[in-house]
Length: 254
Image (cartoon, rainbow, N blue to C red; front, side, top):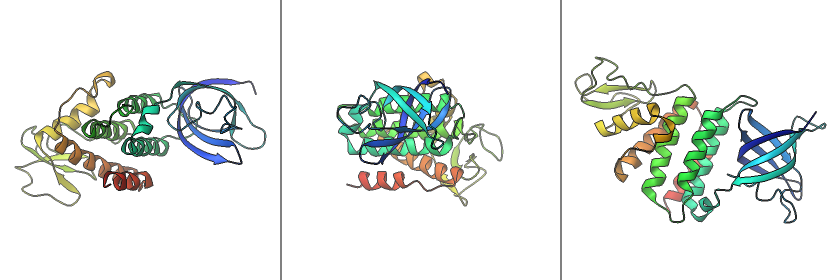
């Protein structure tokens, strides 16, 4: 099989043998692939930086004979997002986002929209000084936009009962719909209270052009609450408890 040249983001790495890595790469045009990078953990290897977690790199791959894994001939880093490693919190955020992306994607299916979203979010986390509000904003954007890409976009067409777009008070996490204060006086099962600003923010995140998806304003307290709502939505819709979220919560509690 001839070599394949791809650019992709390393979303998972596992040590293999004494000095190799098995990678999960979200690659442009071809989607998620598993790759064996032999000797990638040695200082002499040109693959050391290109195969690190969160690295976006150009790779030359070929099909291995021994198993279904692709093998790596060459790698050259495009963007390492190395500043993420300056913050334990942002490392935890990035790991959580990559974990979700790996869960959503299926092997060999083009996922360029999700890849583009993930790159934008990692860029927001790649800062010299930690900014809690910006990290929470990145989380809100990634969670709700990723759900939308996966086919679980919240229905922001007003109240699910009366259709009115006023006095929205509750969000039904299980069904992805909103309810106004006139149709529901108190939270029902699987619903959470939200403000009009939060409702408008969710609507903006799932419907805006990707190059303007961060162009909204919300206070840090509201961002923190909305991020928690997004986490609950992801857990409910994907039916999976992410260990990386537990780690993120532990880090945030430090």
